[in-house]
Image (tube, rainbow, N blue to C red; front, top):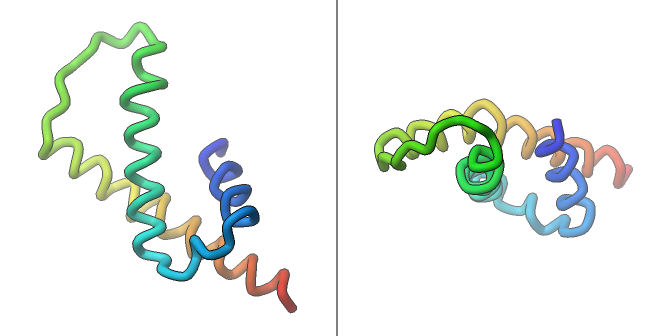
Length: 84
């Protein structure tokens, strides 16, 4: 939920993020993956595991499809409703 709130805050500050929705979704998904991998997980007691490129790409693709694209399109529709 915090990622979604942060995204909607970013879109309000920088509405141009919604011009190319697919690139925004991909970029934000990469940000979410990297933040979890390099900030959140090291703060837990989960043992460190090496990053495997194939697994990272699969994880990012899942984030793009399940989170990045839906919140990008929701933010886009919210912004168009707010303009009316």
